[in-house]
Length: 204
Image 1 (tube, rainbow, N blue to C red):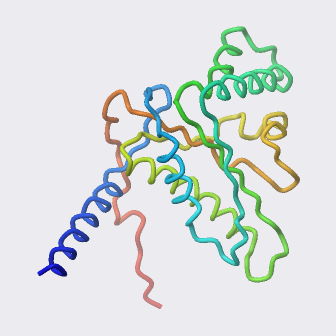
Image 2 (cartoon, rainbow, N blue to C red):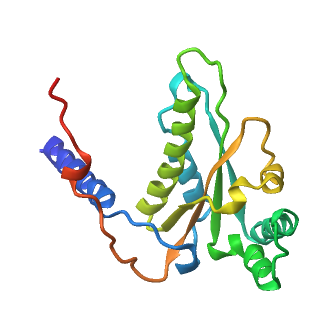
């Protein structure tokens, strides 16, 4: 009887997990508010992200967490990069927008891809894919805890000054900034591809 009960609980958990995957939706950072994950929840989210496929156990990614005032301080870095790198002199409105980038959500996590070339059996492309999987797992883990997420890059992910501020070394790139918070409202559904458009069966 106990075993049947536990199997029933497992089935319920599986149903919930499947429903999350089938209904997952990104929420715009501007549509997020506090609260964000607490310390224990954040550790859970990061732990889940570190369990993605990682051929040869190279750990080809790392995480940079932005909380509290650190979000505003990094926003100043983004604004400075905008002033230095934009071909046209940015307006004050533009600079104010850049300064507030990370303030759109209570928690932001940068995922840094650090793929290494020349590793036998672990092509660089696979390592980059692993970093992408880490981004998605951050989102799914946060979603499971009831938080809204958005995986974005935007221009500052490719800024030399911003990547330098993130401590990126040669070969490291920003895979994305994961914004995490509480959704102001349920996000609207959007069209998804029909399976017939994206699935084929190889016949030889």
